Length: 122
Image 1: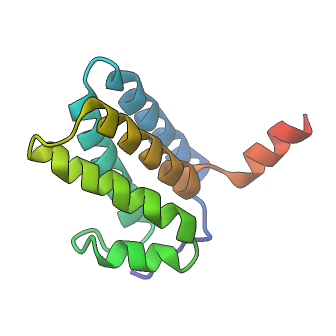
Image 2: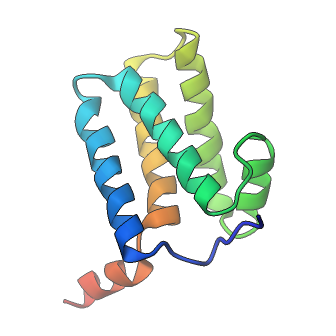
């Protein structure tokens, strides 16, 4: 499957992913480590649905960088923190940074750009 960076999810799918993301974020205060793991998994699922290679993390940023170079740094940094956390090497501040980076990727891959434009016009 070829990545489809410009297409958007159907509203029902986007809504489901948005609800899942809100749950991940809401759990962060009480459970930062599981929340970062879940964010990493959720973004992996989203990337897979978009056609990006999930089993080859190194290829995913290459494909993503073609259309979204700024987001690639966020993705690499957040994933690196998730890996460090799995080894017990990430601080709470690192986990907070990972969530911020995952949020940027989530917004780029799931959010409807027209919703932001419409909100600003109101």
